[in-house]
Length: 441
Length: 160
Ligand SMILES: Cc1ncc(COP(=O)(O)O)c(C=O)c1O
Image (cartoon, each protein chain N blue to C red):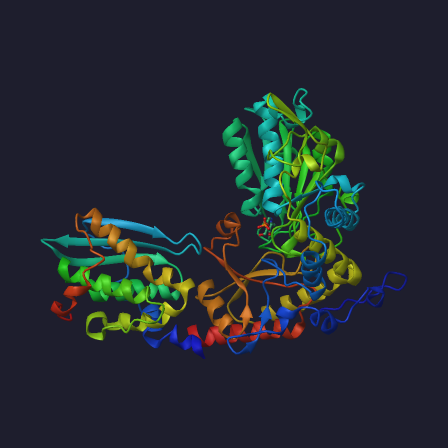
C-alpha cells in the first residue's frame, strides 16, 4: 500500500479514528455463513449491505413488544409505535445533520424518493387539485417545453428513468454531464449545461459502478446562480461517509436503508422544509390528509403529506437502529477504513494480469466500489468462478448501463466493500481471479 | 470444485474454438436476441431451403455459456431437416428446463449434453438458451415453426 509521509503539524495517520474490524464482523450473523464450501467473502455491499444483530434485534423486538399502527391510535401500543417511528425520523435527521426531523420523508427506497420529486414536478405542471396547499402551483416545480433537467452519464437507472419519463410527459429536455476517461464527472461544460433554462440538477453523489465521489461545490454554486434546484442521489454515500446536508447545500437528497445496515423496504427523501411545503402530494390516501370531504380534500404538512397509507413502521425503526449502529462506530472511522481497503485493493488488483479497472485508480475522490474487466473473460464467468470459491461479487451493468456503454463494455465485475470488509477478503478476491485465469486462460 | 460441472471441458472448448462462427450469406432470415439482465447478445442467420437447414451462422458477445451454446447449436442443427430440428430443439430446451433432473440423450444431443450441468444454475439457463431462442425466431421468420413438443418423435432422429 502506498504511504506518503505527512508533514508534521498536519493531521497524522494516527489521528484517524479506527475500530476493531473483527469485533464489527462478529455483529453480523450473515458473515459467519459459508458459500459453496468456503467461508463467504461478501463483496457486494453496494448492492445491499449485511445487517448487524443490533438492527435485527430491534426489528424483532418491535414486532414482539411494540407493534401497533402509527398516528391513528390513542392506545398504548399505538403510541409506542408512533414514538418509535418518529424517533427513527429524528435519528435519521441527526445522522445527516438535517435542521429538522420534519425534513425527513420515509419512502420505500431511493428509487421512490427520487420519483417522489419527479412526480412533484409532474403534478405541479399539470396543475389542478395536485397543487400543494391547494394554492397556485409553485413556479419552481412547473416544467414544460424549453425547460431543462440535468443529470449525468454516471447515474443509476433510478436517477435516469424518472427524469426521462418526466421530460417525455412535459416536453422538457433532459441533458447530462459526461464522464472523463478516468471515470470522473466531466464538468468542462458546466456553464453551458446548467443555465437559465435548468429547473433541476439531479446528480449521483457516489457512483455505484465507478466508485467516484463527486465533488459538488462548483455545481451547487452554478445551480444557485441560475436559480435551479439540486437533488443528490446519496444512495452510495450516506452508508459510507459522513454526509451533512447543511454542508452539502443541496435541496434534496435520496438514500436507501438496505445499503446502510438497515432493512429493505425503507428509504429516505430529505428536502428543505420550505421546498417540501411547496410540493404537491405524491400518493393519496390515509395519513397524508388534513381533511377529506366528498367534494375534495386538503393535505397535511410535510412529511406526512408524502407518507400515504401505513408506512413501513418496523423498517423505519430498524433504520433508526442502523443509524445508531453506524454512529456508534463513527462515519469518519468507516470512511477511513474503506479508504485504506480501497488503496489496498487497487494496488492488489493492479497485480492481476489482464485486469482493467473502470473509474479512478487512486483512492482519492472515490469510495470502496471497484469495477473491472478481465481480458477475454465475460463478467458472468468471472462471477461464477468467484462464487464457486465463496466470493460474492456483482456482475452485469449494475443498473448503470450508460456507464458500460461509455467504456465500451457490455458489463463489468464489481467488488464493493463496507465497514466489515477485511484485507484478507481482498486477498481472497485476487486469489479467485487467479483461478478465473486458470479456467479461461 | 462443483463449478466444474458448469464449465465442462466441452463447453470451454466450444467457447475458445467456436464452430461455424461469423455471419454468412446467403441466408433466409435473421434474428437478434439480447438478454437484458446481462447484456449478452446473439445474431443468428438461417439458410433454409426445401425444409433443410443448409447453414446456420451466428455472431454475438457474451459469457462462455451463451457463446458455446451457439457453437453447439451450429454443430447440431446444420444439415438437418425441419422435423429433426424440432426434436433436437425440444430436447435441448427440456434439458435446460430440467433443473439438473433430466438425463440427456447423448445420441440426440451430442456435445450439448455438456450443458446438463448448466441446468443446475438457474441464473445461467437463460445464457444457454439465448442462441436457441434466437434460432427459433429466425426459423419462424423463414416460415418454419420449431415445435416445442416434438419430444415423442425423438427416436426417429438419426445422429448427424
Ligand atoms: C446510486 C444509486 N442510486 C439509486 C439506487 C436505488 O436504490 P433502491 O433500489 O434501494 O431504490 C442505488 C442502488 O441500487 C444506487 O446505487
